[in-house]
Length: 318
Image (cartoon, rainbow, N blue to C red; front, side, top):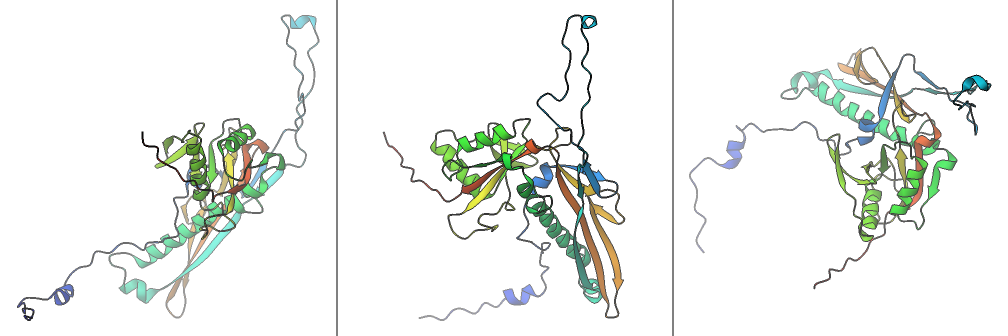
């Protein structure tokens, strides 16, 4: 066997020492598109409190006269009653402190600023928590605060077209979008395809989504499957929401504090806390948020949705 010839040239390992390496910013794998907070209408508050004044509704809240000649009949008198103790929503705070050694940030901030990257990653983490709280918070989360009469069960565990139709009957006044875990979205698409009515798609806020009855089905991993964002097994149960958003539509409204000192973005403040004796700089990040359901029929929940039903599709050759 002949020996491998010796190449009289600069080696790769030696050349590597003089090469500039093209680097990315830190890649945070847990980040999601956060479609919910993009699609939800938000309202800025003056003092962190949002009062939802509702009218006390009856079968006939206000009588009215319908006549060709009002002069020959007495016009009904009355008024529309308001709730005497309306619900008030107070903003919650999601906070984090970032510590950065100034020696590190001074020396290792090219091509990317270490302080800026650390704060950017922390902000993304807070925004992820915000979306989770809008869905799951015991205080104001959509899942926990939906009215009991707005909750329905699946007919057969699987998310079928009939189940989503039933949700629409609960939020029939200008529904905005469904919200579901990606596994639930896939499960519904399988059921619709099996019935011969595969969902069509729509482009919205930079993404492509399947729809049902013209209503987008928005994926989020904040609607857990068996309490997990990323379930390991094939089976599991979750919930699907149908939401109407917007103050003008008496829907769901996201809340934030407007005009914060050191405001970095909507409802988010970044404050420099100083440098300690060891040269460690500290930054406080605070995100103030909440959500309000203006009318009970703005949210409906399809409960106990099974995501693990699969089928064998056989191709028929003719």
